[in-house]
Structures are given as structure tokens and as C-alpha cells.
Length: 77
Image (cartoon, rainbow, N blue to C red; front, side, top):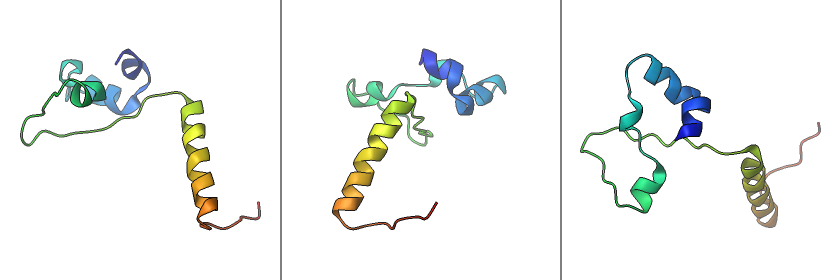
């Protein structure tokens, strides 16, 4: 949450505009591990926070699976 308050432009802008308060923002762990339930009609937004190496690692897995399945095409760059 602390990282989101600094780096998550999508949320920071809405908070600064007075449309959202940080008190109403929940972490994914609240939902998954703690059984937090949202109010009917509430808006759910997943905002992934992390470091670039996590994105690179995920991309590698997707790339390798695609290659195994014969998907995609080589680009001439």
C-alpha cells in the first residue's frame, strides 16, 4: 500500500482529485487470505505493483509456453 501511494499514478490522481480515499483501498491479500468481501455494486480495480524483474520473469514464462505450442511469429527488427 505504501508503494502504491508513491508510485501508482492511477490511484494517486484519483485520491488527489478527492474521488477516492486511501482508507477505502484494500490489498489483494485482504481478499484472498483474509476473506474480505466487497460491497454489492462496489468497483474492483486490480492495480499490480511490483518490480520490473517480476514482469520480465512472467514474460519469459509466457514466451516459452508460446514457443512450446508453436504460437507467434518471428519479427524482423
